[in-house]
Image (cartoon, rainbow, N blue to C red; front, top):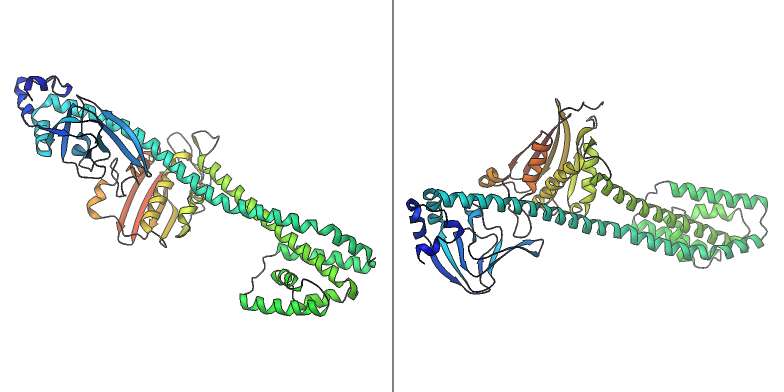
Amino acid sequence: MKAAELRTLPLFAGLTEAESNCLEHGEEIQVPAGELLIREGSPAEYFYVILEGEIRVTKLYGGQEIMMTTHTPGKFFGEVPLLLNIPHMVDGKARKPSRLLRYSREAFWSMMRGCPSVATEILRTMATRLRALEGFSQQREKLVSLGTMAAGLAHELNNPASAARRAAADLRVAAAGFPSLACRLNKRQLSQRQSDALIQIQQDIAARSARQSVALDPVARSDQEEQVAAWLNRHGVSDSWDLAGTFVGTLLDQTWLEHVAGQFPADAMADVLKWVAGTLTIEDLVRQVDQSTTRISDLVNAVKSYSYEGRAPLQAVDIHEGLESTLTILSHKLKHLTVSKEYDKTIPVIHAYGNELNQVWTNLIDNASDAAGPSGHIWIRTRREDNMVVVEIQDNGPGIAEEIRPRLFEPFFTTKGVGKGTGLGLIISYRIISDRHSGEIEFESKPGDTRFFVRLPLAQPGTPIASE
């Protein structure tokens, strides 16, 4: 390609005569339509200038290919990974037959050193692209995080919701048989003493339901069910096995049945015991509905707390409340790990940006769970050091390799697989802690023991330290 033609390209339009040697380093190549020119995660070896054709740039997020931009004639690309010394962050594929100038790594750096006008244009464009990519990636990371949270919450909510639906359906069936049973008992014209005994039994059942019962082991439960079923058969009570399971499940044994039998005539025993079993069943189903709806309410409250819904950006924040909300949000991901908590409950509330701190806790705990792996262990500790609050998050994963530690807080640097991480989680966390809260975030690591330390001032500039 002639020098005069190259000078028509925006990148080379400002070249002086002294810089004309920059035009000699490029190698012209032809790229057929559909060919993948650069691959996300692969080493960066070349810088490209498009002469003809189009290069479509995409990025993989959570298994989904996202369109980033399309480079047309006169545009250049490949400078960001070369300058930052990182692998390619995107894929680049020819949309149509294309002709490009390709510069090797050595030629690129020679051009950066020897051609100030070209270097200025490359750096200016890189800064613009990085801001756009970082902004886009941050939004995508938030969306991916929200999607992960939503999927986890859907899973967590489905279990208690399903349990509540089942219990409600069973409750409807159990309650349907109660009116006829009550009529049969009424027709027996029980004495006042016997009516009082029924009321006492009902109160006893309610008290048992309120207490936490000790579950029997399977062998002991089976033995007791056989004994109770045999007792019911001897007393002419039908459905003995079903009733036996209900009675033994609430620790009502043969001795208790003998006590009940002594208070009612033999011909009323079947109806009395079925009434008792029905009451037990209804009490148990009501408890299941209550537990399920309480779990749903707890999850909804955790989401509200996590997002600091409806509150001002800067507010009094309980560090432990934020950590607990984050653990609830991530519970679907942490269920196979052991999470130990050592909280200093004397730490007062601090003035902070609650949403942003929860984003930090999410990033650090999520990274710790990935590092620890299935059956791993995570520790979360809080303590007070002078006028600072310290949050420590530890995992027993393999540790952070020595060679990558200096780059851990670099934008777009990630050790996760292609499409699994944006490389922005830690830099975003760093900026939230350092820039927004005048705090510090540090780490130390060795095999089996990685710890991140977040230090936050008890009072932001211009705000008082909250009372203990």
